[in-house]
Length: 231
Image 1 (cartoon, rainbow, N blue to C red):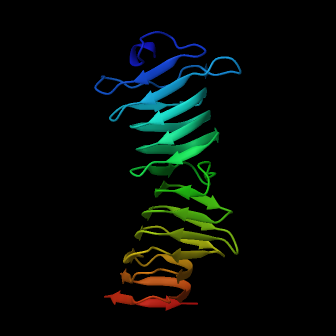
Image 2 (cartoon, helix red, strand yellow):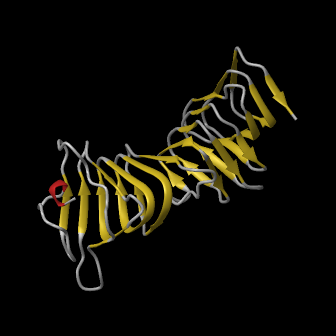
């Protein structure tokens, strides 16, 4: 592990650690790591092209700045996380503030179901595998890609400001709402959806067949080679 960190030593309390890019292997935790307590405040930076995998262990540090790939694969992270690239979540927990940089993405790729431990605010959001259950309203400031199953609880909504591409069902009694400030696209791929609505300032283009409980668009809506089925 320590050969993948800079400085190249086993990190301790207060350590300022960088995981550099360009190495043969990137670290997976093999024990719980604590860099932070009431007296000593450690930090961790993951460079662009580098990665860190929790590997079912816990990581405690004051701040994590992620310019590469942070993988929560079991275990836990206790830190203030600044995500400027990709966070992948399959299992585990996160405690601390979470900041989405302008180029950031969160990818859920766990078992069924996965707890959305990143919370309710995303830049780009991808549901890669399994099932993710949202029980609170969610905001996606850019694009939503759903390749598995996404559940939206009753009276809650996923509000997307960018485009939506889905090859999996979106289930539950909630709403998929398009609320961007410019034109948006929706590729439903003949999957199942709850209520679909718009509160967008731009237009919505639907490309592909759509099966939804209901569709209520208040903006200009273009139907491109699509059959829309409701009920």
